[in-house]
Amino acid sequence: SIKAYIDKLKPNIVQAVKTDILTELDPQNAWTDVTGLSVTITPKFSTSKFLISSSVSASAGTGSYAPLFRYVKGSTPIALALGATRGDRTPCAFTGGAYGNYHAVPAGLDYLDAQSVSAGVAITFKLQWTCETTVDIHINRSLSDTDTNAVPSPMSTLTVTEIYQ
Image (cartoon, rainbow, N blue to C red; front, side, top):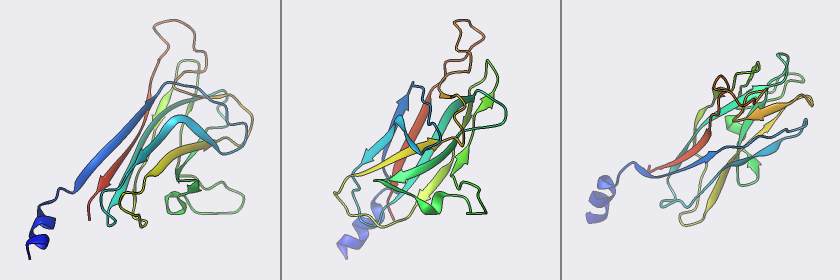
């Protein structure tokens, strides 16, 4: 049929939406939205999947703790994008952040979300983080953040790409 022929011509990558942030946070032992790292995308097809990609530059105030990150779709954590539940460990998508006055190490994860969607209905994907203590942890800055050329001023991104299936 003509429709089947046209469907074969559609590109696999339909749209990509990216957010960049320059901010700092302190989650204080609770899952908290990373300010500025959320993307709202309106699916063009109900059969689409979404590739969620992130790169987050973080630093920690101690070598003993690091931030934990997870992806959220709407207001629900994406369970399939979390590590295994084992004992008292906190399941997360990825962890990152380095201890040191002049470090803000990037970490991230690519995850293909294949949960069903409705074409034309906007979806918000976001990144949340926590730390199992109240130690200072920062996004897009080093621990010291002094004004010298030895101190980085990085950025973080969240990109969501709609992939036609």
